[in-house]
Length: 55
Image 1 (cartoon, rainbow, N blue to C red):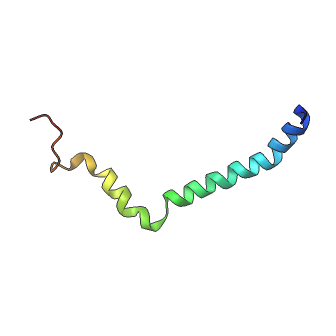
Image 2: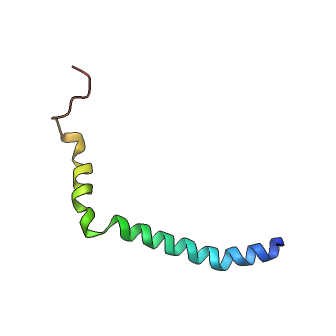
Image 3: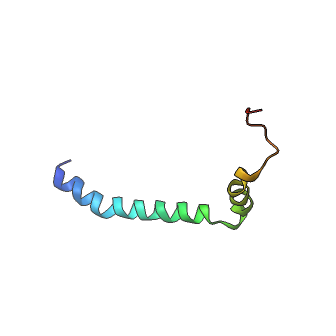
C-alpha cells in the first residue's frame, strides 16, 4: 500500500470511524442509566464513611 493510498483511506474511512467512535462514547457517557454512577462519583469526596488510613 502506497502512502497516497493509505492517506486517502485514512482521510475518508478513518475520519468516519473516529466520528462514529466519538458519538458512541458520548452517548455511552450520557445514557440515562449512568446517572446514579456519575452522581456517586461526583459526591465520593464528601463520603466520610470510608477509612482512608489516616487515623
